[in-house]
Image (cartoon, rainbow over all chains, first blue to last red):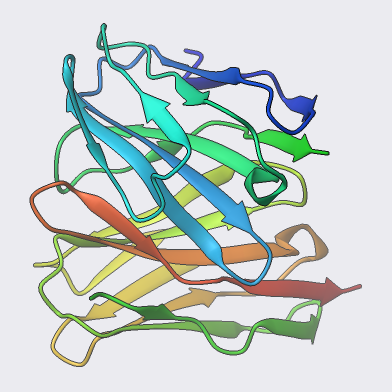
Amino acid sequence: NAGVTQTPKFQVLKTGQSMTLQCAQDMNHEYMSWYRQDPGMGLRLIHYSVGAGITDQGEVPNGYNVSRSTTEDFPLRLLSAAPSQTSVYFCASSRLRNTEAFFGQGTRLTVV
Amino acid sequence: KQEVTQIPAALSVPEGENLVLNCSFTDSAIYNLQWFRQDPGKGLTSLLLIQSSQREQTSGRLNASLDKSSGRSTLYIAASQPGDSATYLCAVQTGANSKLTFGKGITLSVRP
């Protein structure tokens, strides 16, 4: 059972480039979310989805897009990378409400 | 707005000591509270999930308690080992969107 899989594990981008961080889960979870983790800031919610075709913004959504075409996949797109987006990104999934959240291993992104 | 606080930010103890990690939150209207472990450069591993109606949960040497009315949770680690060295995060789940709000974590070092 793979759980939550994130790719790539590491990425370096130049300012202005775009890219997609991939997240897939094989637990048939309805709820998926993206967080970024920065020193001194903790984990902050970027976007989340409560099911296929439904997405919404979290605390820090600017500069990021998401879509949820299937239950399994929840990619995060950086439209025009900025140095402020240098961070570690985590994808998580759970069944809706009151259930345990499972996290991927993270993507460490550096924007130069 | 829900805020989660974990103090102190770092803790160093000798091997074998029993220890308590604290977590406090400002809004008692939570669905659950979850404790995670994060090793350096790794993702988050779920340790214990306490539902809002529960008082405590146990797993091996770990025991987590929840006092929702006072906005507090503790993670008790019995007979600590060097392998317990990691960052411990607590998170509360609130709202219709199942959002997780995280504390900034406590970095634990267990000295041999």
